[in-house]
Amino acid sequence: MKIKNIEKKIILNFFIVISITTYLINYIFKFQLGYLENFWLFFHDDTDKFADTLKIIFSFNNIFAENELIKLNVPKLWIENNPYNKLFYNSATLTMSLPPLTIIFLTISANLAKLIGVDYRAILIIYSILLIALLIKIFANQLKINKNLIFILFSFPLLFLFDRGNLMAAIAAVCLFYLFRNFISHNALDYYDLLAFVIACSMRPNYLIFGLLFLFRRNNKLNILEFCKVGLTFVLSNAVMFFIAPNNLKGYSFDNFILMVSHYIDSTIKFSSWNSSLYGAIINLYRSNSNLIRSLDSTSIGNLIHRFINNPNLSNYIIIFYMTILIISYWKTRNSKISRPSFLIILCCVTSLATSPFADYHLVIFIFLFFLIYDLDNNFQDYAISLLLISIILLPKFHSFSPDQISAIFASEDIFKLNISNFINSISLNLLIIINIWSKKLKKADIT
View 1 (cartoon, rainbow, N blue to C red):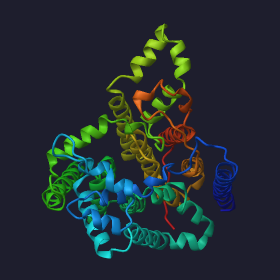
View 2 (tube, rainbow, N blue to C red):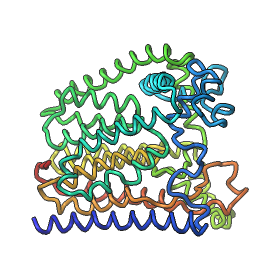
View 3 (cartoon, rainbow, N blue to C red):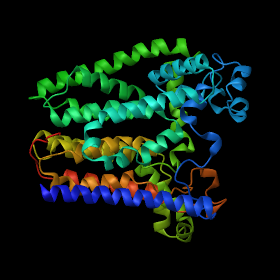
View 4 (cartoon, rainbow, N blue to C red):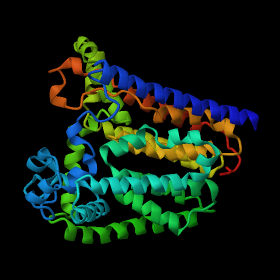
């Protein structure tokens, strides 16, 4: 017990010291001394603060008139040039790339913001207070035992989530937490877990891979029935929501949703600097070493690199690679060669690495993963390295402009420095997969 406590304490103290030091360096060197001009911890554009929710809310012309936006102190730039209400392909807007449950949530939030009528940020403040209260309630016992865990709870991904105002990511992550906790501590998931899963995946469809957590019944027949139940529930739920959502947002339809998702996939947003995916890391390395690669242009190696990076199917190959790992991991877990916590870690890493981009605020799922692994009573030593790597992922890191616009690839080479955050996170995520896929079967986990 003493060894376990020492290891946990060392990992937690390491995280706290590095976090505080990084925030201090950012404050002193960037804001007081004027250094680190091209590096940021949080989003660099102050005109886009809280935009992931608020900018969309105030793009709904069917809810807000211009004079109402002015009265709510909505930024002038959002009123005059809001990209979310501009039409693409005659009838679709960027907002229509969002799943129907998110559309319903945002339009209801817009009406609440209009009803409150105080300031455009009021609705986000209310939601944020409710979220903080919920998180503190969820982790009250752990925080009571060790108050230093507050630094993990309010680590960079959650702070960045508030900075971007992406409350949908928080809702999906909290739903997944209940799924994670019950998967570790129970033999089978129930209907409440299914509800949490449907909500999470209806907001973040890439979380559908967590449906594997339901497929641990006694035999294949039961697993097939469970797969049908989970799949049918998700499909029917979203069919209903696709029926409701057009009443909230004119022009929203399944066809426009698919159209704008395709537009999103083809856009340059996949090169976002606040991104932990493997695709982002590969592009990051490629663009930041453009001079070296250009010197190899006339060689077969340079040719091979260009063909690999510019292959339109690169992201699909990455997905296939990680799906293969996931299938192997699932088989090993079913055959008691991997523990449930290890399989859960692998799942979280796969969804992060295979989704492009996987914005840093979605790393909140690793906050919840940290709490679950930290509280394991049995065989903690087997998870110590995993917990350390998770803490590294949660650390604040300086972000720089990894090349997020293809057209600028050679136009301003000095901007394209290696994005350390993206590089460290993707390496840590892959190490977590390697460590846990080769882990030995552990005893059934105990959650305190």
